[in-house]
Image 1 (cartoon, helix red, strand yellow):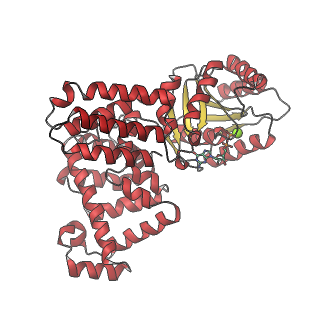
Image 2 (cartoon, rainbow, N blue to C red):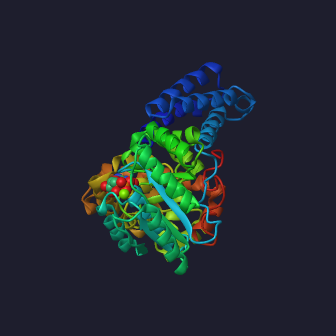
Image 3 (cartoon, rainbow, N blue to C red):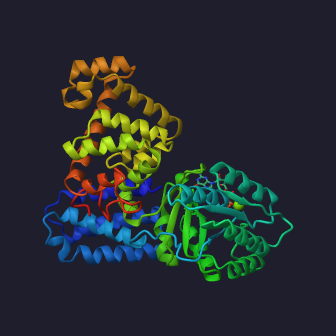
Length: 463
Ligand code: GDP
Ligand code: MG
């Protein structure tokens, strides 16, 4: 997601970055480019307009001219306002009800509701330590109930059976009673897909909603529909009070217009992103981190949370200690991180979260990602321990030897070293400020969800 927008914005902002003084005319030029980039990303027009107005007001004011580095100040404004249109703070699920808390899904056919039920069930079980039960009120397609049963089995949560001849309200009531009896914390209710213009189907879900009184009513919507996602969310919200949105298929959406439009158009927060078909491809939505990702600053906090949940804890702690002590990040660490990331699956998405690795992410997708990974691994494995610890010692003849040893070219070795240097620079910058918090988070000393506070992992000056 956001690949094109990210590229466009970075190009525009780069020209401003080093400027000692910003004039109204180069601010105007930059804003025109930003505006065009947002429209091309399929962000809804009213959202683009209000965004540009706000950035413009701040950019021609004191904030920029009085700052030591006007280019950076401008970038900060863009980041702040991107964060603001996505809703400022992450909005967690509300469990502040008598259990079981019911989460109801709503949305169009094929949006990814059932898949998201499976993902969310897994996420709540593993990350939030909740006891979860799922149930389907999709009585129109028996295969849909079966689909949910299979998913529940895969992620290891309780499945409450239902059949196509039952009434959705009855199904929900029976499931609720059973969930209560079994001391379930969260009951996730899947529903049939429907169009907001289908009044019978909308009446059905309203009736279901009135009876169930869910703690959360989540609208599930396909990111690939762009700004239409925001418009359908608004139409559903008019009929059914939503508490949030799950934006799915962001892995297939290069533009990002949906993510940037939904909050402004509907007033409802995006709570989760679906980033793939697998059951672990779900991430909580953090506006500020997302703004950082769009601007190529990386999203180290999300990466660390993912790491906390998925990677080898011992290794992570070792890595954290080492970074804390020396502030150094060497190729050995890089290799370890690569291997951990590989274990975690989604290569492209993960790389997008690493500062300075956004570009690499574009090159690595699908099969290519696998190959590129193997190559990076092979190159590092062909290095001596000294070379891994002090990559600066790697000069011409050593490069040739490493290339020969890994079956790659000197060019490949150079490329890796360059990527590594970029990453090391970002890591160093980060270690001056927010890195401590970040690493505390990594070592698992902070409670989940408190990864160092807003902006904690971003390099100073970018907060
Ligand atoms: P529902 O009709 O809303 O219940 O949609 P489903 O959950 O059955 O999903 C429809 C299709 O979208 C399935 O093929 C899913 O595998 C796919 N899908 C769901 N979420 C995602 C996602 O985040 N990324 C990708 N690539 N595919 C997804
Ligand atoms: Mg379904």
